[in-house]
Image (cartoon, rainbow, N blue to C red; front, side, top):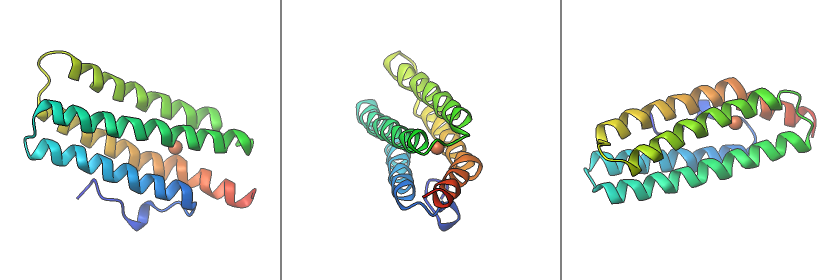
Length: 134
Ligand SMILES: [Fe+2]
């Protein structure tokens, strides 16, 4: 399943990897809540649970980058900001009428795809830099 963490996603930085695993777990919870046709209130709760951890995780990565003078911090941060914007859009859609579970599933899949691309394109580079500059 696409919402499962797997070894290919490993960056080699234990803190980042552990948080990524937790992120995938929470994405999976959201997917499960939708697939089981849980009520909107329940799905909303899981969405907030996910959003909360996304913000915690990005803040941790960004702090690591700043404290290690990571040269690619601006580009990395920009991707995080874009992702949070997408997430906020979904959260807002939830507060409005007419959001369907189908839309949440679709968005969830897009967010997971984004995360996988981000790990390969950005987080692995960051982990390599942190290893080299420890
Ligand atoms: Fe990142």
